[in-house]
Length: 252
Ligand SMILES: [Zn+2]
Figure 1 (spheres, rainbow, N blue to C red):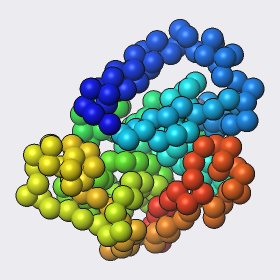
Figure 2: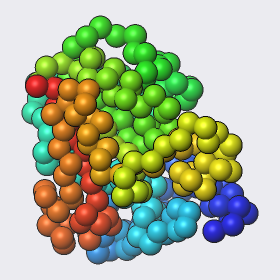
Figure 3: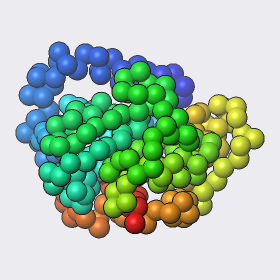
């Protein structure tokens, strides 16, 4: 996809986000009653839309704008974590996605905190390589598609481990786009980063060996696939691949 198409797609995405609150009832009635299901907005829809560079089929929810990774993570959280068990928990959400913020805020007995280095919509400003909280503070950490932007990613993982309570869990998601993790700090030009790392603001490509980095800071980490906790029919219905990964970390 060329730069113009990419820009058009991004502009459309942001235009849709701004107009969505007013248009959503009409969008919903048009798209609903289909064969697909979005667990983020809980709507049955006719189809997911193409999205990405290059565009991926069946990616974007036309109602809430969720992508495959959001739907998979939410399905995992619902099926395999303690989020909804009613016990009192403190949660840290990095680079908060608005749709997730709305869902997390509805969870009973959850003391929710969102943080970001730059985004003013987050509740606090935070550098994840130097977290200003005491050891063993949070019961849950959710951080998705952030570490591929961070030069000192292992330092950030180490900080997540430090502030997580014993027995707590973290979902630390990254895109897996290589057979083996590849990074080169000397590549700083955005155009070169796009060529080598797939996006102008990424600093590496992760491979499945990403899990070794998580384990190296102390996490008991699992590399799960969607098919480990969902049927193929469920994955199809929610519009993501059965092989899509979840990196689930616990602090022993
Ligand atoms: Zn949706």
